Length: 255
Image (cartoon, rainbow, N blue to C red; front, side, top):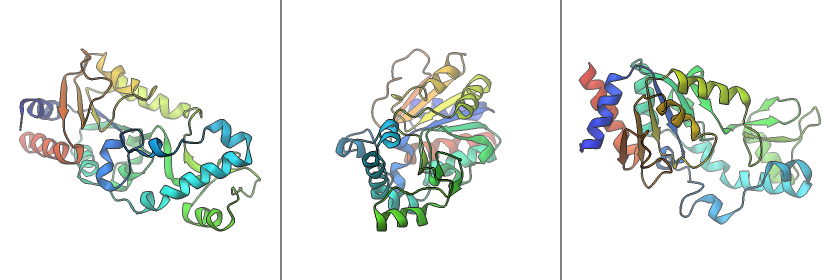
């Protein structure tokens, strides 16, 4: 291990209430495409905004077509070594909270406890009525849209939509509150696979770091927090490879 990796191992070994913050880079090894990076989904297709979904039939159809295009990849994706390493830390009693920007549901599928998980941008694993809030299994709803090409509705009459946060749609206040509460209570924070460019999500690890707790970043490629004085350790590399190695080293040395 290089010096930076050894420094992060020490942080993980000594901490007992770690806030883990994750972005798209933790899931690319599971076959989930990046959105913002080179060749990402949003370089090929502009996402439909919340206002467009609400205001027009065309917007709702475009949203469902976009979601249908990527549904098979999301449905079939499995957690990778990085997701499992986060679970290993939790089972060792070291994780206070996992805050993710990802909508793939892979943290929970890997075994992260629901009461320790905040999915800031929602989840693709459910379809939700924007009227009554009722949730539905995705496959039948996607199949209905595939056959009819008409935006599906809830029995209550409300529009159905994957339970994700669209551009321009407010984040759920309860999720934000839990994330920032974790940032105020943790004794270390580690950002994994995030470019840390999307706010208010990227403010969560900074809020923790500004309290003076150690802040480690693991990512392949630059992040917006690189070089900030609050950052204690910056590890460059594939999260699915380097983070599990560091977790193993931290837990073995703590045993």
